[in-house]
Amino acid sequence: MLPPWPERSPGPRPVSDRLCLQGVLFVLYTGIPWQQLPLELGFGSGQTRWRRLERWQEAAVFDQLHRILLSELNAAGELDWSRACVDASRVRAKKGGAATGPSPVDRRKTGSKHHLICDGNGTPFQVVTTAANVNDVTQTLTLVDAVPPVAGRVGHPRKRPDALLGDKGYDSEPNRRELCKRGILPVISRRGHPAIHGLAKLRYVVEQTFALLHQFKRLAVRWERRLDLHDAFVSLGGRLIYWRRLKKATT
Image (tube, rainbow, N blue to C red):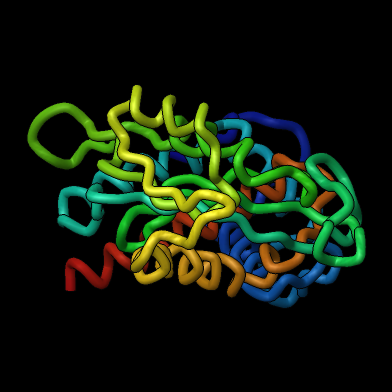
């Protein structure tokens, strides 16, 4: 899926894609700055790595990998389409940039928010990055519509879960109507009323998924000013979660 390099190009021979990917993964796991990437590891300079990551993101490599791994998980019976869960988590944005804003829960320090939708097993379908002061409810339909068609089973690729679970931050009558039009049952607690009994026991998987994503130190704190590079890291972290679950299901 990686875009090939031209056979004849000016300058020195580029570092192999495998070594570049290893360098990107090293930064993702450790959170080390690009300029401090050790040359002794053979991954090349940090500037080479982020330019290669930029190139892969522009070529939609991670989107292709997203669909392939999801279809493999679906074929292995690892996706729970009976429900999907939505939630959001804020992260500090140390250097500012696009999709950042004052965090209302962090003394108005600059931050971003990760909006996540996952299946009933906690497999992340999609992550959307916005400013930290964006309301959760505004991203409900964006997340639902961002779920790609997933093949792997007999019949048409599936795209919609049976139900959508959310806390009171997603309470919205227009969103409920739109979800019903899409054939999705909204199971969302209402403001001013007691929370739906037993909802927290079903929604815990989304918190677990955030914990898995933010174990990558480059995602626990946002360092990229450019949103496309940050989203590339988020995508790569999600694909690693897919890969681990797929390996566990097939061994």
